[in-house]
Length: 272
Ligand code: SF4
Ligand code: SF4
Ligand code: SF4
Figure (cartoon, protein in one colour):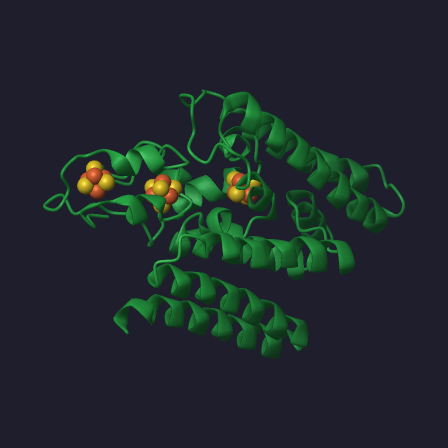
């Protein structure tokens, strides 16, 4: 039963968050929202403990589709980075800002880039492409993320400074256009670089928050060097080119780990 403990812990953490936000903000949406996400995550962790190879994908689809379709398209909440700036500028601490605070800014101190492995609706689609393991060396293009990050901020700031009318409607359409663009660029890059996660590595503006915070993550992949036989299988299956054999926080691509557990699943010696 011990192997199911992490699933129970995750469920309890999210249930606590759900009840706290429901009572403090007097809005039952938070109870529904965080309970749903907690159940989806706990299910994935439970299935992983049972040895399912698709555990992560199931959680990613459950959470990603819910956020994209229900929160984004049906409820009209811009959950992309532009939405975060928008709600920040109008001073509203609602779904998009709470989502960023929990999943992308403070949460990574606890669970690193778990968002990228288990919830992101962009990666949910990219992970179905044929290049699960990068088939080319990593490129030095990470600087592009700072440009897309700045562009998202400038776009929203310009709407406010220009006193543009109907900003709420613009933000809804920005969500749709933004997602179409992300998918188009993400899919094109995956095929060009033969790497499903190329968009995550070079373009995604959210990594400007995620990478520094996940450096301090409590949850990390570590290697038991007494068990390791240096077969190198773990490095071969990592979609993010992480050097998981180095336990230091400054290990190569350490802030890229999405906790997908492929290295753990494939280690013949259970050393990770
Ligand atoms: S890096 Fe960006 S696109 Fe990739 S999974 Fe994370 S949030 Fe999603
Ligand atoms: S797969 Fe396991 S045994 Fe092989 S190098 Fe990685 S940690 Fe060591
Ligand atoms: S394979 Fe291991 S090191 Fe690489 S991203 Fe997944 S969990 Fe992290």
